[in-house]
Image (tube, rainbow, N blue to C red; front, side, top):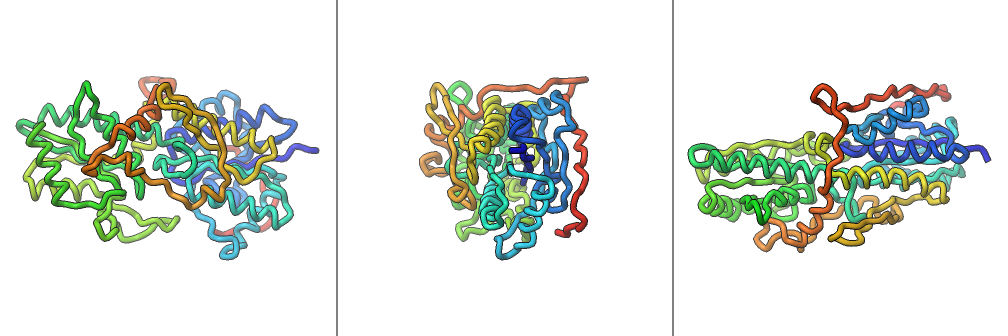
Length: 420
C-alpha cells in the first residue's frame, strides 16, 4: 500500500515548546518513509487546511527541523478558528475532507488545547461517515495546564518556571526597596478558569528563602476585605509582599474582575488587565506604593529559560502521536502519566478524545492553602518536577539563535477557494 501523507497543525495560544512537538512529529515521520509520505503543515493552523494553504515540511533540512526543538512561537503559524458542530457547519468539515483527499492525507495531527481536541475528535468521526479513512491524533499543548486525563500539559512547565523565577526575582527587588519605596508588587499571569500558572508563583518561597507571596486563584472567589487583610498582615511582618493574580479571578457572583466586555474567536470572555485593578485597590485602601506587571506573552514564549522536562515531554508526545497512527490508533491523545514524584518519573499513556474534548481541569482543593491565598505541600510536590532542569537554546551575538523555516507552499489542487 502506498504511503499516505500527514497533516500537522498548531492551534491556539502558542508555548515555548510547541515547536518541540512539531519536531517530534516531523523527525519521527521521516524515519518511516514506507508508511508516511510527506508531512504537510497548515499555514496558520486549521485555517491552512480550509484554505488549502499547506506547507511542505520536506523542503526543510534536517538541521532546520531539529532547531524547532529550541525555537519558541508556532513555526507554521497558529490560529483561533474554532470549528462548530458538524451539523452546524458541515461545509467546513466537507471542505477539510476535500483538501485531505486532494493531497492524499491519511493522518491528521492537531497540536493544541481543549478546543483542538474537540476538532480532532469531530474529524475522526466525520471520516467514518464520509468513507474517507483518516487517523486523527490530538497532541496536547497549553500553558494553562487544564486538559483532563494527562498529568500535565506541554507548555505549562516552562510557563510555570518563568512565573516562579519572575516572582522570586521581582520579590527580591521589592524587598530591597520597601523601607522607603514600593511595598507591594502585583504580577498578573494567565489562567482563565484554572489557577495552575498562578500557583507556580508560590514556588518562589522556599525554606532557604522565604518570600511573602499572596496568590489569587480563579477557583477562589475574590473577597476584597480578606485579601487586603492578607496583604496588610504580610507587609506588617515582612515589610513588603508580592501578589500573583490569575487573569481569571472572579467576584463571588462569578463575573471576571477584568471582564473587557467582549469575546474572542473561541467565545471566551476577553480579559482586560486585573493587575492594575488590584494594585489600585491596594493603594487606595492601604496606601502602599505598588508596582504591577502583566506577564502576557512573555510567560508563554520564554524559550531562553525553559523547563528541560517540559521540552522532553513536548517532543516525546509529538513522537508518540506518529507512533500511534503507525500502530493503527485513531481519535486518541497521548498523555503524560506520573509514575513517582521523588525521583520524578513519567511515561506516556493515551486517552480517547471523547474524554478530553471540552473538559477543563481546575486546581484541586487539596492544592490550595486553607486560607485560599497560597499553595500546599501537595501542590509543591506536583509542581516542582515540572520546572526541573534547563535546556538552553544556542546563542549568537548575545541572543538565542532561533530558526525561521522556509515554509514552502504546496501547489493547490482544487479549483475552488474557500471563504471563512
